[in-house]
Amino acid sequence: MMIFWVAVLAISTLLYVLLDGLDLGVGIIFGVTRDEAKRDVMMTAVTPIWDGNETWLIVTGVVLWGAFPLVYATLLSAFYLPLLVMLAGLILRGVAFEFRHKAKRMRWLWDWSFAGGSFVAAFAQGVTVGALVEGLRFANGHYVGGEFGWLSPFAVLCGIGLCVGYMLLGAAWLVRKCETDVREIAYRQIPVLSIALLVFLVVVFAYALVEHLPVMDRWLERPYLLFFPAVGAAAAVTLAMSVRERQDGLPFFMVVLIFAAAFGTLAISFWPYMIPFAITIEAAAAPHASLAFMFWGAGLFVFPLMLLYTAVNYRVFRGKVRQGPTRTGQY
Image 1 (cartoon, rainbow, N blue to C red):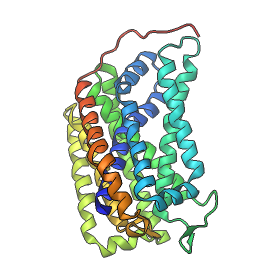
Image 2 (image 1 turned 90 degrees about the horizontal axis):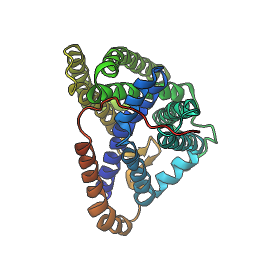
Image 3 (image 1 turned 60 degrees about the horizontal axis):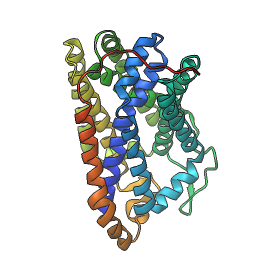
Image 4 (image 1 turned 120 degrees about the vertical axis):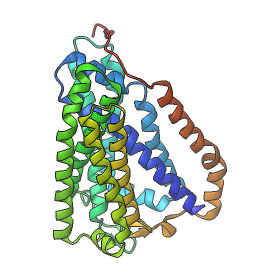
């Protein structure tokens, strides 16, 4: 049961990063685009899927709450502020989705809400991941870092890096879904964002070496972890070739593979810890009876149905989006 719920947590987290990451990335790209017609197309490319993507964040939270309550409580204690900021950004972005299509005089407000909410949510997620990688302060099994224990130059750097990564994911999605001008703009953005992401990874690795972060010891102990960067490097090469040859369908899957490789690297680096390097999976898990009870409901029915729903949703809304007239209201 414990391993099953670890797997569910890993899958739901990865799906959230990939699926909501693409529309967060589109939202940030939306903010640096000035042409209104192109903005309409960008929003149309993610409108049918964005709310379903966010469902995986709820799944992650519910699994932590039910199967690993100690981790849930600890993360909330350590990350109250960034998590609240992230939720505020997601809410603001969700409101902008609904209001922008009806707005006329106030459309600029919802444009900024969509772009700003996307950036804030992505940045908060990156800061959280960076703080976990760098390590939180614990004493006797309890978090003692205070309200701003998560804030550090490394965490801020990771926040910026995740925004760049999400933009790359979003640009690859726009290539897959859009035509003409928006597609060409996304094609031009992918090389720039790829180089920026590579620079970020080099800086992060150098910082980890200089500061002797504990995660670096895991790399020395587990050389098989190099498999994941090798997969990411192969995906990056394929991405460059697909962009050069204008293969619309391939760049998105290569960026997904890069993200999956990075996720696998972190997950295996931290194993068997859920909060590195303080709380193990075994210590964090709920009693077996609770895990088994959850299995017969959420594990056996809800989780598979959500996977099916996601697959059907992307199947139904496959294909290219086309620019059309936007309905507006009077406020």
